[in-house]
Image 1 (cartoon, rainbow, N blue to C red):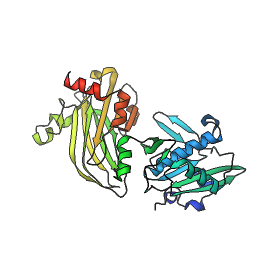
Image 2: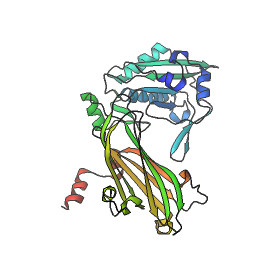
Image 3: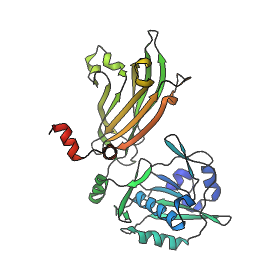
Image 4: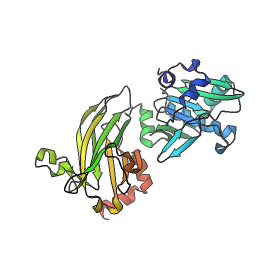
Length: 341
């Protein structure tokens, strides 16, 4: 059984006090696959509507890796592509007896959930609820006729492949991959360069992933594509705009794979001074995902080291199935486009 409270607060759940939570939110926090923040606020409806959002989140944790849900957390504030939680708590104005609360949760989620504990903390007549949820051995669970899961740090309706896997008790490793910008500069001949890192993580603590492949497509040219060495050039195609790596045979939890690449370009040749980077990746047991970035080189004063300010938008670790829905791709139009009939 995982002690998530110890992980996040260095205390067991039953030992938590209000200052542990206020201190935790003294700095900005983001949600993840294992922690979710719920503010109690009128914008989410009345008390019962707020509670519905909590139960939906609990259901998602049961179907995923388990974790912590805090009801009464600060309101999230959008910061670019991130939502950050910091500062004053949005405490709940009603007290639900612990037994009554667990009973209501149990009556709402099917099949019967096991492994949900809650600590209720009183603060000047208002209340904070901290839930610790263990991954369920009886998944998939549903709430209001929908299966929920924690995907890319959010509670979302579970995709078909995950529901099927849960019914069959097949475990999919949680693989995530990111592009980091390491250095930006120019050569004496006027060409610009951008050093990037591709980082691939396995966030499934007890399950390795195998035979991981990934590709990065850029509107710039990868320096390796111009190499005289054929063993290096074989990793590039699309006239040097794509780098492909099929070499990660095993990826352990806590030991990310990191690969560095150099991009060559002239800013004046980029449409509107912008560059797109698209990373798609998957493994033997994990589904295909995408991480996409748009960079703007018109920004002034970008530091040579750690030039992250170049990134104007990003969308990371999107499931291929979600991307297809976003693009409106269906079986019919895909076959029509590829078969030309």
